Amino acid sequence: MITGIRGFLGSALARSFFQEGDTVCGTSSKGTGPASALPSEIKIARLALGDVVSSRIFEEIDYVIHCAHDFSPGAFEHNVEGTRRIFEAAKSSGVPLQAFVSSYSATPSSVTEYGRAKFELERFFEANAGVVLKPGLVLGSGGLGGRMLNTMRKSWIFPIPSGVRFPYVGLKDFVRTVRKIASTSQTGVHKIFYSDLTSFSEIAAAVKMDTGRPLFTIMVPVNTISFGLSAAECLLDRLRIRLPVRSDSFKSLEANQLTPGGANCGLLPTSHTTLQEVVSAAVRELDHAVFISS
Ligand SMILES: NC(=O)c1ccc[n+]([C@@H]2O[C@H](COP(=O)([O-])OP(=O)(O)OC[C@H]3O[C@@H](n4cnc5c(N)ncnc54)[C@H](OP(=O)(O)O)[C@@H]3O)[C@@H](O)[C@H]2O)c1
Image (cartoon, rainbow, N blue to C red; front, side):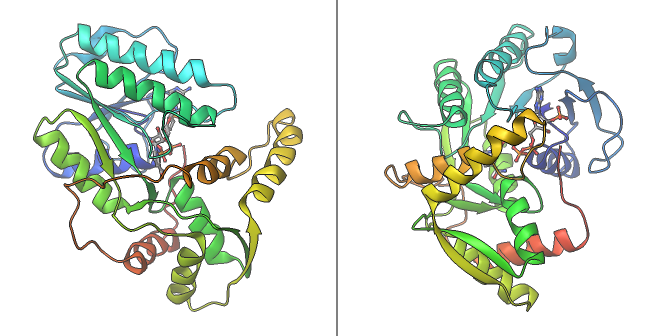
């Protein structure tokens, strides 16, 4: 069972487990209707973070992967309590193993609500013999990475936050690694990103190479970008308009420069696909208009 199964990572995991012959189901706060990114055999139950959880939905479930995350500002408690509630209901229904999709930006010194919620839940899953998956930025046709690539491939000019490097992983390698972890029933924390870091300018160069279009980049200090986005959010949040990226993502990036990611996941291929290959694969998917957005 995959929570947040309609999302970018949830749907990619679901398709992959399904193709390998597993029986897959999932949850969504949006209800039980069909999802275009998923095979029709995959059943979806309605469940929002914070809802009362019926233990009936966990009958015959061997493994839960928690992908659901509410990215709205102020949703810290909602995410932490809501995820714990689903974990407890699944555990009391006899589900033997559960994995939580955290993030490389979850650290004891996380400055953002996102990083703090993820870190709090990591500790909870660790204390309860669960599995913690810590991906870097996942590059594919959805999520934050997909939104950035989608903008870059269509733009002539792109502001680049200067001086930040971050861990990343291609969607295929992320999915393959999660499947390996699930198949071996390993518990503990798994960092899922390549050993080399990347930057926005390297990604922009790879997009430029792939599309053959000109893409001019302007270096802007990362704190200027997060300040500008914060100011815009103050106004737009009131109007319920959501920007494609939030200031929190850049605050996290800035803070994470001081706490580098550490060892990569031993389950990733040692000589991984290059950044160019990862970016090109994502751009191809975006060309075919399969941006995954919940
Ligand atoms: N993409 C990345 O690069 C990346 C990197 C590191 C970690 N992560 C983590 O991976 C997980 C999946 O991320 P993603 O990129 O796949 O994002 P996503 O596409 O936005 O998926 C998140 C899912 O959470 C569900 N959700 C949102 N609010 C909810 C609520 N109130 N109750 C229940 N479900 C809710 C949404 O499903 P419904 O609207 O259908 O309910 C959505 O499908 C997240 O926890 C994210 O923090 C992602």
